[in-house]
Image 1 (cartoon, helix red, strand yellow):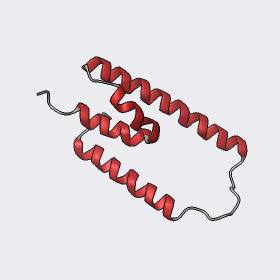
Image 2 (cartoon, one colour; image 1 turned 135 degrees about the vertical axis):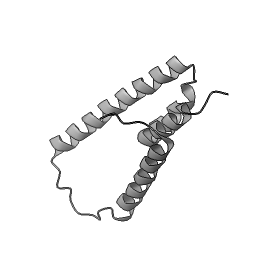
Image 3 (cartoon, rainbow, N blue to C red; image 1 turned 90 degrees about the vertical axis):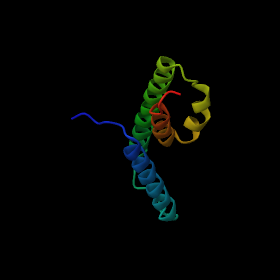
Image 4 (cartoon, rainbow, N blue to C red; image 1 turned 45 degrees about the vertical axis):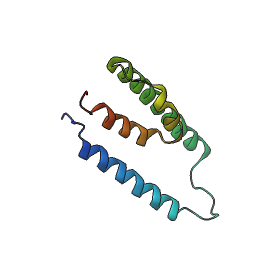
Length: 97
């Protein structure tokens, strides 16, 4: 199945991300100890870091191929990588002027 990136899909994903982050922050655990083992936490962080590297390489490649500036996207990517990816996809779908 081929997934076509549309504005509706990207905006929906951004909205879902915002809602989930709001719920996560509102319902965050109190002072209870975490049930995750240390190695599981490290494994999750390692996988997330690998995903971030892959996404950044993809964004830089797409920006290079399309003649867009990459440095505009670096700072937002450091603070919120997945929403930045969604906004980058929306930006790439703009019609050339």
